[in-house]
Amino acid sequence: MKITKAVIAAAGWSTRFLPAVKSYAKHLVPIWDKPQIQYLVEECIASGITQICIVHRHGEKTLKQHFQYDPTLEEYLNSTNKQKHMDSLHQIWQKIENFKFIPQARSLPYGNGSPILAAKSFIDSDPFVFMYGDDFVLENQPGKYLSSLISTFIKQKAEAVCGVQQVLHSEINRYSSVQFKKNSDYKNQIQTVIEKPPVDQAPSDLTLFGRFIFSPQIIDVLKTTTTSRGELWLTDAVNTLAQSKLVIAQATTKDSPWLTTGDPLNWLKANLLFTRQNPDIYPQIKEFLKKL
Figure 1 (spheres, rainbow, N blue to C red):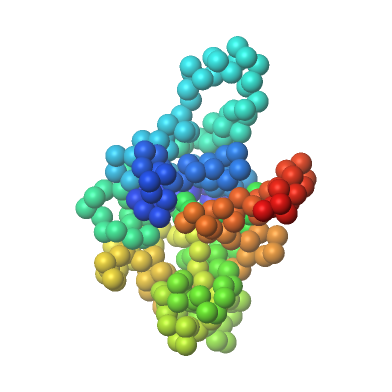
Figure 2: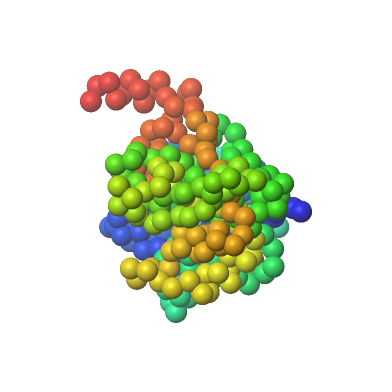
């Protein structure tokens, strides 16, 4: 089995970044010198993905514009010998065989499970990677963690492999909480996932985040999942799938931590942590912060 498809969810209104992103998608806000969503695309490519679908808000055009070839810009860069500034996008164009942009229909419910339903024609009957567009994995070797999830999915013949990371116990009520099945033949088999549990009722401090490998069966599960608190939660669908199928959790490592960038403060933290990986940048940032 080889997994070649990925769906990236980028369909929200990003209200926590308003008014900054009123005229463009929040997922284009940069981590250092590239839009965050481009890092996700590069992570997919490094993991062997050749077909990518970005599910965006209805009427949103800037994501597609970013990844489209611009002949006027290319002509200018060639004439000024500045082509290197577009090298990263050139590499994406060379390696992606199928790049689709699908608007999430207004008829679909609000929630992080709906992008999968929007992309069902793209997914077809194939297993696929699913990513939240505002979840960033900080890696020196892009795609290392995602490749490990894909490998586990294939080797264990699972229906789903979910990325998880430990969070502070006092903050688990902001996330989901994973409970593992006891006496399982499989390591870290998920028994239950609870969305935003009270702190004193959380089965663990491990939470799902935006890196998943799914079989296409998740589509049928989402179709029959009822909304909760006005949203279609992917967590609820994963929980349903885990009741009868093999669903495995795989934790991040210190070399590949998950960083949420869904709000300005965490986005800024992600930028600062990113600079630590660059010896040309970090000393200057560190010296600057000392003066504050």
